[in-house]
Length: 56
Image 1 (cartoon, rainbow, N blue to C red):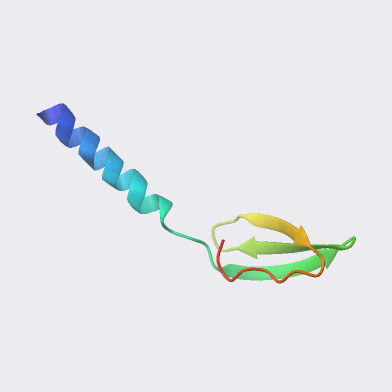
Image 2 (cartoon, rainbow, N blue to C red):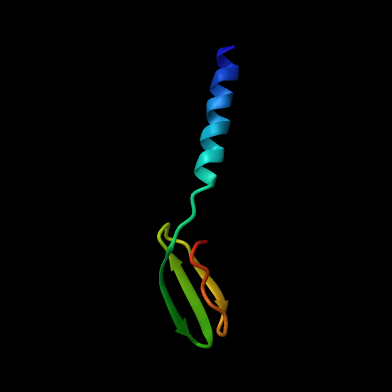
């Protein structure tokens, strides 16, 4: 029973932390590419003519 409770806590914690998304903090262009930086530290490279999504 104790293992099952621990497993359930682990699963719930993992699922709840996976739902958080970073918000757009900065965007810039460099060498015909556009970069989007988010509050969680992720940097995405997108095509030059595209617009950065507000969350990642």
